[in-house]
Length: 336
Ligand code: UD1
Image (cartoon, rainbow, N blue to C red; front, side, top):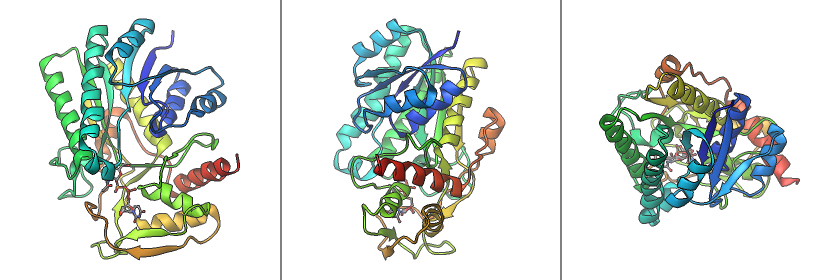
């Protein structure tokens, strides 16, 4: 019988794509989501993509009684914990909300998992824990820091998992440090769908491409990079989703915890991403150069060797595929 995985935040951007990858890999899955940053029709769309009914429970990861009920009702083999808040600027304005959702949410989940005797967890971390690394590509042994409450929550969660794993060897955690996830499922039925004006680059460019926003502001062209704009390691969300399945497989088969980067290992500048999106949508996209964004770093891309070694992970989709799939999603979305 298929092993059943609980996906907290499974209706969100990365969660919904991981749901598809899990089903394709033969797992069963239950989604828990409070829909604070996900559309309700995601579950219908997941049913179309997978051809099977979706089990989705609406609720909050902070509710331990709800979590206890889910573990009682379903034979859960492991959990992938996506449910968190992720907007850096908002975290500066509302630190308590971020601390509560991201840190207290993880603790509530871990307590409930322990009661249910489920000891396998994949955790969504972020390359934000590296700040501006001293060496590139950055590997998993690099020093960690934080620049804002959001980054602080990811660091505290990572450190908490380390303490818990060290104290009780029944636990095994897969900590995945995401670089910059972009793109969408090939059907164009699911994708990234921010509620407000996007903060992140590709969702913003997508709205310029559809005409919903007038032009991109490029935050700084005076960085120490070849074209002066910031460089990041963008990874296709379906590659990232595959990384979750591989992390889960490792936890369930060997029981060995791991901390790995999930990126492509290649950095692209803001202007290179804009040009790739122009190729995808077939027309030029207006932009202006604006001052640097507070808290931004010049250049980050990951060393991906450890993920390959431990999980067999390798990103296969490039920047053009990321932009083409994003455009396929937003263009369809606008017309439906
Ligand atoms: C941001 C967060 C990071 C978080 C991640 C979640 C900051 C400082 N960092 O990463 O902690 O884990 O989102 O997805 O917010 N850019 C523009 N114009 C825009 C938007 C972005 O020029 O309108 C540039 C940025 O300056 C940067 C690059 O595009 O060089 C990528 O930005 P973004 O998509 O926001 O990702 P990060 O800053 O890497």
